Length: 125
Image 1: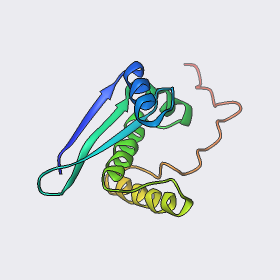
Image 2: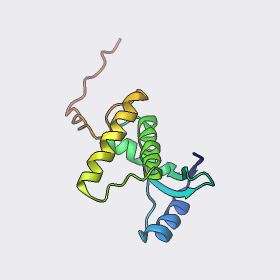
Image 3: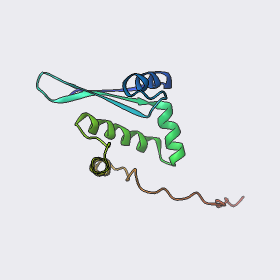
Image 4: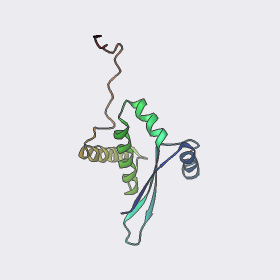
């Protein structure tokens, strides 16, 4: 399998999303499947760096964990996985969770702890 992984800016992500999905906004990940001579699936995975950073902050996740999740998500799309229907989404999410666990990352779908109302302060010295 041959895969090209690209990080792009929001303008390119938006243009690709508009052209291929008819959605006029940048998105976190896009996958484009192609077949090689041996019928093994491969393709391009396009990640928008600024969207990834913004989502990681909003979700309270390390950027590396969020990026790993979306690379795995894109790879599964290249292998024919989909999340259009609930059963397909559940199957794909289970695969993502298992693969990420094998890479040392937590469940990306786990509920995040609520932020503390009054975070503890450090004692002054």
